[in-house]
Length: 294
Length: 280
Image (cartoon, rainbow over all chains, first blue to last red; front, side, top):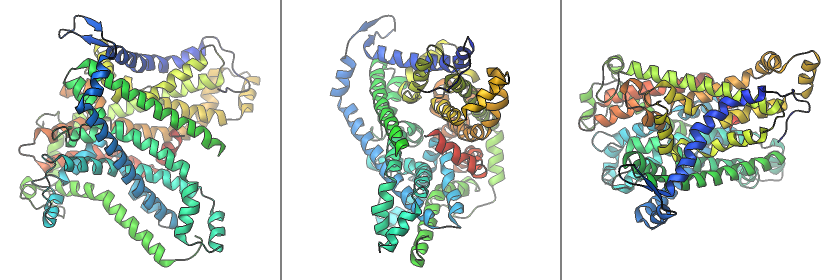
C-alpha cells in the first residue's frame, strides 16, 4: 500500500488521527462481529446465567432446518429477481438517455431521485398501491380476474417486495449504466456504422461487451442491496409473512434474534451472512483492481 | 449520434416517458392520497386528481401526537439531527484517518488500513444482536449518541479521501515542507481547501444515507422521544392497520421523502459525483 514519496515525520500524530475511526470501528464493528462468532458456538441457558460451548451445533441445526433452507432459496429468488428487473430496466433507460442529446439531462433528473427514497418508504408506497381494500392496482387487476391479496397469498407478497425493492434500485443502476455508456468511445460506434452494422447489432457486439465491467460491478452491488438493504422494504410491507413467504435471511436474523431471542441460532445465521458479504467484497475489490488496468 | 434514425429517437423518448411514469407513479399516488379526506380513500375507488386537503393533513401530521409515534415535528428534528451528525462525523474522522494513512509512515499503518477496510464487510444487518448488546452495555440506548456514533465509522469515505490524496502532486507537500509547514498546517491550508468538492459530494451522499436509516434507530430507540421519521412513518402505518387513515399516512410519507429528494434534485451534480466516486 502506497504513501507519498516523502512523508511527514511521525511521532504521535498519525495515531491520534486514525484513533477516532479505529476506536469506533473496533467497538461497534469488530467486537460485535467477534461476539457473534463466539456466541454462534455457545448455548446460553434460559436465564442467561451460564453458557456452554456446543461447537457447530447451531450450524448443524440450521442446515437441517427446512425453514432456514427455504429462506435461503427464497432470498436467492428475491435477489435474482430484483437484480434482473432493476438492472434490465435501468440499462434500457440508460441506453435511451444516451441516445438523446438535448433532453437527456432532464430525463436523468426525473429518473434519479428515487435513490433518495428510503426502503421503508418505498415499501409503504407499494403497500398502499397494492392494498387489497383501497389500493389502485388490485382494483385494476380485478378486471383481469386476479384476486390480489398479499396478506394471504405468499406468491403475491413476494411479487410485492420484488416490485418495491426493484423500483427503488432502478435509479442507482441507471446512473452507473449511463456513466458506463458515456465512456464507450464514439469512434467505435461510428466505425461499425460505416461497416453497415445497425443500432441493435452495434449495441450487442460493441457497447454491451464494453460496459461489461459496469454490469458485473452492478451485479455485485445489487446482490448486496437485496440481501441487506431491503430490510426496511420487508418490514414495512409483509414483515416476513404471510406464513414466512417473504422471510429473507436478513429478516430472519432480526426476527430470530431481536424478537425471538434465540441468540445462538441468530448468531450462527449472522456469521453465515458475514461470510457471504466477505466473499462479495473480495470479488468486488479484485475486480476493481482489474478495471484500473483495463 | 452516429446516424439519424427518427423512429429510434422516438422510441427512446417513448421508453423514457414510460420509465419516468413508472418511477413517479407510486409517489404521485401518495401525493394524491395526502390531499384528500379519509373518506375519499376508503370508498374503494381512489381519486386520481389532487384534492384540497394537503395543508390540513400535513398540519395534522406535524403537530398532533399520532398513535404509536411521536409528533412529527420532533421526529423530523431527530432525523435531521441524525443525518447531519452522521454526515459531519463520517467526513471528519475519515478525512483525518486518510490523511494519516497517506502522509505518514508509522508502525501499524497497514493494520489500521485493514481494520477500516473490514468494516465494509460487516453491515449492521448481519450483526444486529451483538451490536445492540454493545450499545446497551455502554448505556447508549435511547440517546442521540447511540443513534449516531456507531454509524460514523466509514470505510468508503476513508477510501475516497485516500484515493483523492494520492492524486495530489507530491511536490505540493514537499514545497510546503520546504517552506516550513508542519503536518497540521499543510492539512488545514492545502489539503482541506483542495478537498472541498469531494467533501461536498460526500456530504450529499452521506446526508441521504443518514436520513434513510431505519434498522439502526429501530434497534436502539424504544422511547418515542428519539424516534426518527422513518420509524414514525412505519409505526403510523402499522398502528392503523384496522382503520387506516391513508391521507395522514401518505402526508407523513411525503414529509419523510421530501428533504433527501430535494437534495438529489438541486445538488444533482454533487450527488452523481459522490455516488460514483464512493463506489470506486
